[in-house]
Structures are given as C-alpha cells and as structure tokens.
Amino acid sequence: MKFTTTPIEGLLLLEPRVFADERGHFFESFNEVELLDYGIKGPFIQDNQSVNHKNVLRGLHFQKDPHQQGKLVRVVKGSVIDVVVDIRKKSKTFGKHFSVELNAKEKLMLWIPAGFAHGFVSLEDDTIFLYKVTEYYRPMAESGIIYNDIELNIDWKVTNPLVSQKDKILPSFNEFKQSMNVK
Picture (cartoon, rainbow, N blue to C red):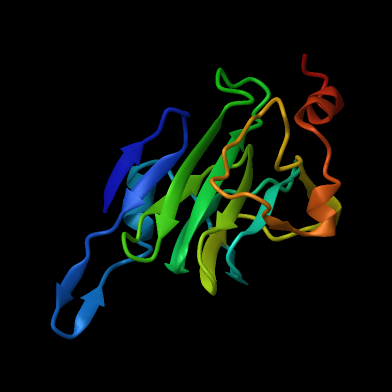
C-alpha cells in the first residue's frame, strides 16, 4: 500500500496495490502490519456499511470521549466526496477541514484518527460506503456538527443534498466550540 500524508496531521490517504488481468482485479483492503508501520492502531472492532442514493449527505458525525472512533473508510461501489473536520482541541489545525473524492475505480482509502468529525456526500446512485472503526457505536456518545456551517464553509460539490432530519438540526461549529470551552 502507498501511504500519503495530508495537510492535516494524522489523516492519511491509502492507495492499495491493485493486481488486474483479464479476470478482473485483486487488492488488499486491509493489512494490520502495514497499518501499524504507519501508526494506524486498532483494534478495528466493527465494520459499518451504507448504501446511498445520489446526493445523500451523511454527517458531520463523531462520538464524544471516551468513545471516539478512528475510521478507515473506502467506497466499494460508486463515489463520494468525503470530508473530515479537525475537532482536536489542542491541534494546530483545529477547525480546518479536508475533503477528497473516494471512488470504487481508484480504490483510495482514508484513515481518520479519533478527534475528527466525518461526513460524506454520495455522487452516484447505489454508492456503497464502508468503514472500519476502532470503537463500537454508542448512541449516548453520538454527536455532530451541521454540514452547512457558515464558519466551516465546506464545498460539498452538490446542491440540495438529501440530509436526514437528525443531521439538519446538529449544532453549529460555534456551538460545538462553546460546548468544549474553545474560543
């Protein structure tokens, strides 16, 4: 696998080595030893998968301490714009976001350590999004930030996304900062 750093410390893009021939292709989507060599520590204890219509936006989600999740995300079918926001209180990139297109053709993956809000928008019908997580989902730790926050100013590359009622009422980034006592 090829590992590439991003402008935000801790976020890594992973590009698997793909072996293709007339039968199709093969690649390793997970190799614990390689991940450990780059500081990506599990254990990965739960896999989540969603199937999404075009323009479905999910996020920006995270779990509060002590149940924060690291996520290794990829697209099995279709494509998404994947977005993460650094919400690590002491990080020099606190409040900055990073976005990348993930798609089934290129097979690029993104490692998102604990301490980030995460979301994605599907660019195609029947997009299958898969993520391995380092902590179980815990409803009482669930939280988020509104996807269209003015301060974050994220370009989701779509107009009029389909967003759940729950995600439409998430707090603003400013409200999130106030809850963390960050100015």
